[in-house]
Image 1 (cartoon, rainbow, N blue to C red):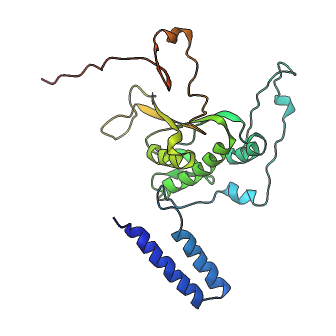
Image 2: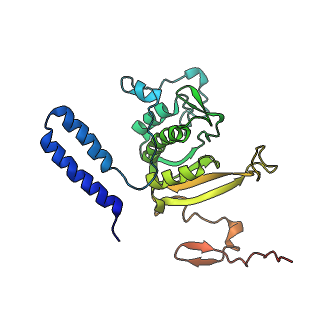
Image 3: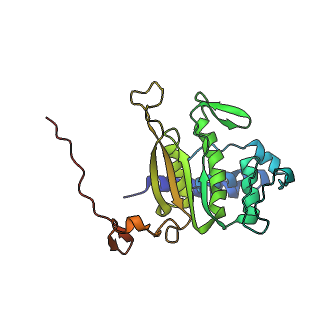
Length: 257
């Protein structure tokens, strides 16, 4: 079957070559080059209006640096391992961590704004409300940059966990498939976060949120092939090439009368 979209693109690209021969001045060639770039851009996946954050503008001329706050230091053992708290703009922080911890982090947990439209997501010092026509585009621009750096920070054993709810779940799943690769998807963990149900106008109350789990490399991920505890060994008494597992009976079915 013919790919009609591809045929249309090839026809337009051929016409652009004709225009380049007719318009050889720099301004025309630059404009035609931009059109060609858009025509050749990805043809599957999420497409959104890309937005620039104030932090992006700042970083064109300013370089963030770490500043140690000695009076807040907690040190139990000067010769032992230690943790540190990094406070600041999260994009600044991620760029700084990339300089020193690229490919060295085994586990990342992200709890991004859920973009509910109820003043939970601040973009360029302004709350994003439901009436904002670019609400999802702004959120995707925001999270796309951060996930790209997070992937660079992960080691080959690394795994990332990302909390989200229904407002951006579908978009985040597609975006993560694009950034980390569909083959590196581990699980979508459903968490019962509100047993009483959310207070909303929806006909069905929301009881849950999600945690998406992706590996840097599914074949090496530390979460795969983990050692079973002593209490689990007797229960997970079957094994195959993928590891230990247990057998469970079929769930009870509800019989309609």
